[in-house]
Image (cartoon, rainbow, N blue to C red; front, side, top):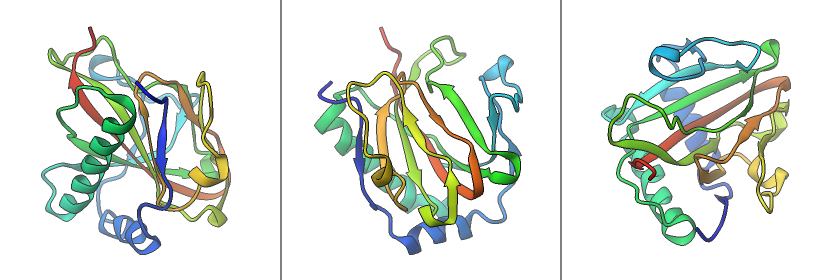
Length: 191
C-alpha cells in the first residue's frame, strides 16, 4: 500500500451530481442501519440518514457504475494494490440537519460476514452537494498518518477512496442537507 487515501477533486461536474439526484428521486428511501445480515439494525444514536440503493444492474446508472469502477481501479493501481473483483451496489445517503444527520466513527468491513468469498476492500465516497448548501457534515478519516484537505474533499463531485478497514465518520449536518454516494469495491477475503 502506497497511501492511506486518495481523492479526485470535482471529478463529477455539478450537472452530473444533480442528474444523479434527479434520476434517483423516485427510488425507495429507507432508514439507515448498521451491521449486516442478522445483526442489521436501526440505531439513531449512531447513524442518522436516509438511504437509497442503486444496483449494478440498473440501466439508469450504468455510466455511474463504470466511472466509479474505473476510477477505483486507477486509484487502486496507483495507491493501494489490493486484489479487487466487484462492485455490486451504490448507496445514496441523505444527511439532513432536521435529523442532525450523521454517521459516527466506524469502518466499512465486516470481517465476520455471511459471504464465504468476499470482503469490502476499497471504500469510495462521492460528494454530491455543493458545500455552500449545508453546514457541518464533514467527512473525517481516523488513524491515518496524513489527512486529506477538509475543504477540497467537501467540493461537489469530489471522489475519495480509502481502505475499508480505516475508521471514518460523517459529522452531524447542522444546517441544510448533504447528499453523498458510498460504494465498496470487494475482493477475496483478507487473509
